[in-house]
Amino acid sequence: MLNHITIMGRLTRDPELRMTQSQTQVASFTLAVDRDFGGRDGGERQTDFIDCVAWRQTAEFVSKYFSKGRMAVVSGRLQSRKWETREGEKRTSWEVVADNVYFGEARRDGDGGESRGNSYTRDYEAPKSNPKQASSPFEDLGGDDGELPF
Image 1 (cartoon, rainbow, N blue to C red):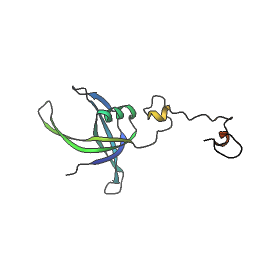
Image 2 (cartoon, rainbow, N blue to C red):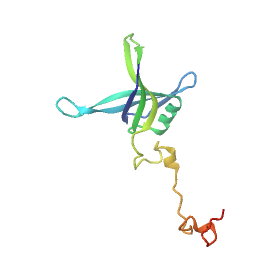
Image 3 (cartoon, rainbow, N blue to C red):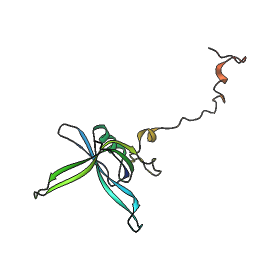
Image 4 (cartoon, rainbow, N blue to C red):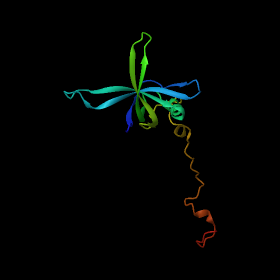
């Protein structure tokens, strides 16, 4: 049997990170996923709102780097949960249990300092060019006879 699902959509709200009683991290979030086709009459495309749950390091990653409106690609398995309301009604919920979560787009311009963009992009600063640096990396090897110093 195979149970694998991959969806791509935008987060409808910031992920909610919680801890279980055994101190395991779990993040819940919902993706708005557009269908590839419009209605029968070729009208507007419909959107499905799909609940997702991520555990442990994936939960931490999602809560740290994703926020409402960000595009995400979620790969995992579809799972149903049966539960009962306070009034005693039996319900079933479907959710994607995320094995992997990927960025669905490059970091947007205008994401301020509070952005949850990936840290290596936010903190990385390109090296400053040194005007005194040799134009060729081999100029400072010494000797003008063209031989390498090693």
